[in-house]
Amino acid sequence: MLKIEGLNDTKGEFCSDEAGTIEAPAEKEEGAEQKLDEAALRRKAAESIYGSEEEVAGPVGENWLKLEEESKTFTVTKINPGVRDQNRVNVFLDGHFAFSLDVTQVIDFGVKVGQKITPERLTELQTASEFGKLYQRTLEWALTRPHSVLETKNYLKRRQIKRRQLNRQRVRDEKKPLNEFEDEVVELVVERLIERGFLNDQKFAEYYVENRYIRKGISQKRLRLELRQKGVEQDIIANALEKIPRPEDEEIKKIIAKKRRKYDDFQLVGYLVRQGFNFQQAKEAVETSKREPMDMWM
Image 1: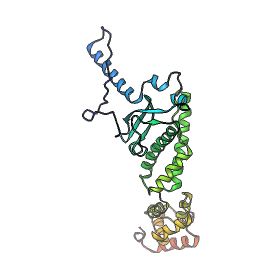
Image 2: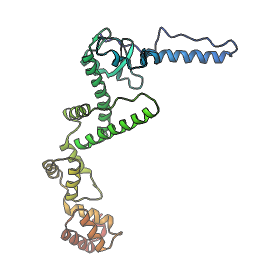
Image 3: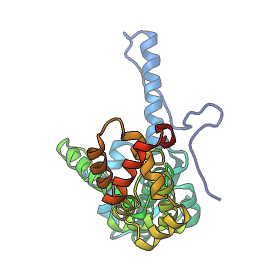
Image 4: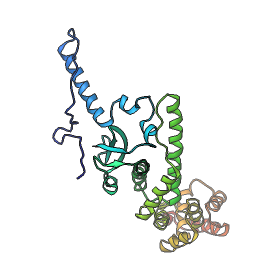
């Protein structure tokens, strides 16, 4: 049975049998005493989750895990619900906060209070912790709209770079660096998203072909180029264009209707060529547009 201590369901406050009060100086007013008492309660509640500064720092100001992980087995002493994310829990080893996991990971790994954790198992759980946090953030990003596999890898690369830059700033500010995203964790996140169907280049290509410049018009040549830049294979692009056709004559009409008042004939032909249409096709379309009412091209 998984033991989770933490929030009071009725009041939404942290429970702590050890929470105490501190005495205010006699000359303080009653209101000030109450504020000090409340501050002490909040501090005690926070320490019950994260441990005190002394606990976290360890006896010699070093990371206690690094000091002892080579020579001992740890014990899970407490599992508390996360504060900012209720789908995650904080795991304490020997009274110290060690890592967090999402609820599913706690069940999958069988983590429970009283369990003995070897240094090897600890490394595995810490990697799982970083994976869980990064996977959740990436999933939220991936669900905003379909993305290609390459787009997702580039998104994760940007997160890696941003974390490194943040850590350099934290070092300058004499703060503890945050855990960085290892390449193997990033690869595992991408693999899991593909495995669960959240990343699929075929579906992405179909979405892109159907929605890219749907009102403005776009040439197949430009569609192919943009999809290749997003890492989509040629055969997948061909399948998407076949499944969701974008006839060139219809697409060129959309562009001419939008740009006709802005460009003269020569400029309009040049613009169409730059958008991926061939010169003869662009020239004929511009000449045809002059012979037909503009509302037929809208």
